[in-house]
Image (cartoon, rainbow, N blue to C red; front, top):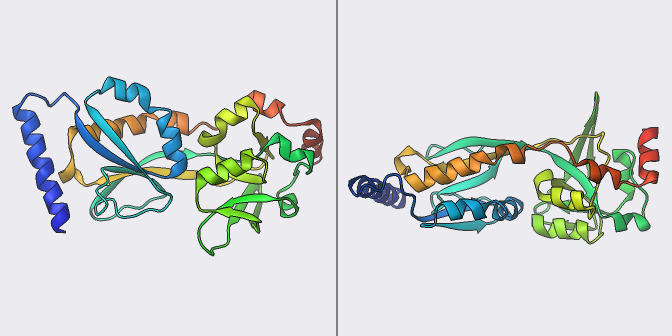
Length: 255
């Protein structure tokens, strides 16, 4: 509580200083942004122009796939999956992000293409999860809904490790579209069973309450929210679909 009050006082003093010095339109200082690994990697590809626009702003990415208390951890803004609003924070919806089932083309030198979610039970999988909780993948096609517990020989609690394992051909994985769209365009990954959809990731921006507001936080928040259209991309590039082999297309036509 004392730490939060101290930060509130600091923010008020800083806003007062900005106003008195006539710098209210000038963004400067240091800001800490908490982010999961996959989103942090995506964000680094978007930051160059933003930082060039605000040369006196310093951004620190605090990357972790586990979520702590942003007030206690001194985080100015954080990216979170799902709603996590508390009495001391504000939550803004960022985007509903598609997830896609992907694998390396090399993976299919020794394995068949899945035509139905049940086929995944007989294929090597890369599962991103935590602890001893069993991962469950959900699929929907029209009125059909399937929930499958995923027993995998490769599980990790780090999304980038999961990403790399999929690219290296260890198995099939479920990834946010924004984190694999480049590999899909280049043909380094293949989008599997596009006729089946999975629940989207509900991304939010979380930040301390309005009493902690300052210009640099508002500026970074607006920047993050401006990424929503790109994050909400729902169409896998045509080139990526063309890379799916004839064998896969035959499977799909049968399903």
